[in-house]
Length: 309
Image 1 (cartoon, rainbow, N blue to C red):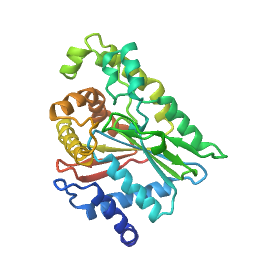
Image 2: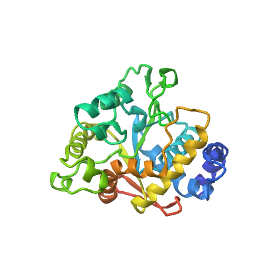
Image 3: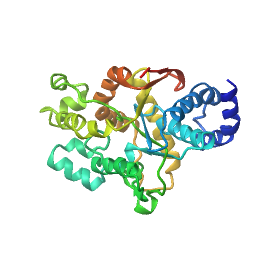
């Protein structure tokens, strides 16, 4: 407990400052001290213990939409840098989405539903594999990585891309489908929502996405050193939290006339493309993730389960 208190006193100011930057007039953070002390600091001790300074330690952080991946990964980054003196780089799988032009081509070539960003197949997998490879090279060379602007549903200009100058000790790679596995062909036949029933009658979209998980994404995820899963209680909660995210995005983007902010109907429709993989992750990821962080209906961490290696 002494170690945790010592760590907390050193990182408290920076963590609280970050949390404040994420709050809006309507959405305020509750029990932040408990979350940091009881869950995030112990998690950082675990990561620090397992990290190998000879090469980057890849931490996969997964969880459905709205679970708080960005907030938690950003706080973990602050703690690892501030207290453990580690070089940490955090990036989301979302930053590797294909551009609108690339997705338009994909939607014409394979299936119209691939215009909608999100599912495996709508990311630039070669860029992600290259990123993993470049960080492991002995003679590290500075390189840039994309950043994605969800408000306009396209990549930011290259001037706003990440500039990775030094080899990190820890890389936090977060995203809703990070670590997800493919499903069996027999289960693909059964539709999970109205969107699949109407727009994917011949299972072309489902089969393509599943094949991506089975091949390229499997290769990518196999390189993760550990996998942390933020587990919500059900899919309805994710919809509620995703709406909350959209409200925040709206407040931040009011000045931008090009913003593609979604309505409640848009969000629910958009999330149907995520539903199949998300529900499979609910079912199977607790069996193979290194750490399961359980969230309650109030969007707070209620427990953390560490698996023995």
